[in-house]
Length: 437
Image 1 (cartoon, rainbow, N blue to C red):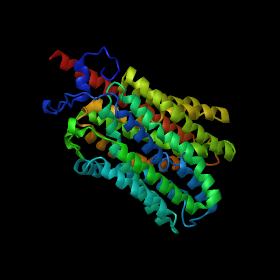
Image 2: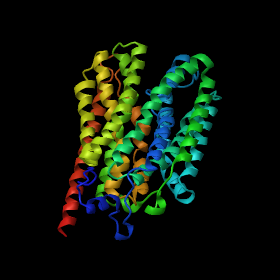
Image 3: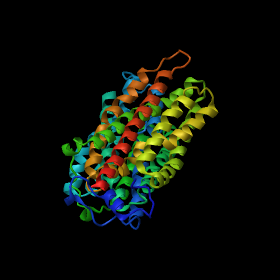
Image 4: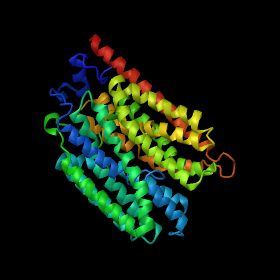
């Protein structure tokens, strides 16, 4: 299978890896340089992930979890329920994904950097305006929707860039860059609480917005695309791609695995408390999850380049499901929870680590941006509602509050792994047919 990183593979496999199968006119004859300025782009996307997803959009794990705990304990919005705050966190994800077609079209018309700089401004504005929010609906609009839009405008154009610069090291580059969310989350989860304690909630929001906005502008100015060589169509919603069986399988994997991903994220912190752990140990669980993310994602990138992108994604998705049943479900002690979060931190965000290289495997480098746009759209519903489903599945006072949530997350990953294995089977059969003709 192409994409394994074996330099002895015939060149035809590598061309297939970067060529769109939709037509011979879409072939890319100049392969990615596998380095050079691409490493600067890796650093740029690392910063972007750290100051978008790491800062804002992973509730109960990164900095929003600290804000969430403060909102609930301080009763700042007495007319709000825990479901309201859960939806606000979910909006960070879903709004970022929902703007994908618009951002893709803007990037085509005005270049990669323009929507990214605009997104940095929206992100900063969302946090700063949230510092003045007096009612829950104002928090929905600011820390929910506006921040989500900012995350989407900054991060979506950056995902396709790395695959343009790398071929054999494509997954490694994506893994290193995606580790930025773990580093950013680790830093901001501690920094946010310290700022709330020392300079107030309002100023914590303002400082977060200013710092995140400035860092994302710097990262956006560093990034460079190779569109003049690849000439991607960058369609916001490509219906032609949606008629393909392999694309449907990839989008199904994304949709179903995201149900498990969001459920784990929104359940872990409160699950730790439900089994009797202290607040400090529950906070440590979040820190270890971020540590697992920072360490594991580059390693996953190495494995993906060596063993194959679809093979690695399928195996890791299945491992996520198995660990939910084998480790998380029976966990009743701090040590077992730490083992689970270290493993899950490395693997359970497999979507974010592999979606760029997988899109190249399925549709080719030319159609990468168009298929990525569809991928972001496919996860809007699970990122919006999986968190609410996880909360509704709880059984408070039952002695095993998160049993149904744990089963739901495990089943989601197992089913998603089936979609990925079917995609692998289909693509291998397709290549065999092409070789025979």
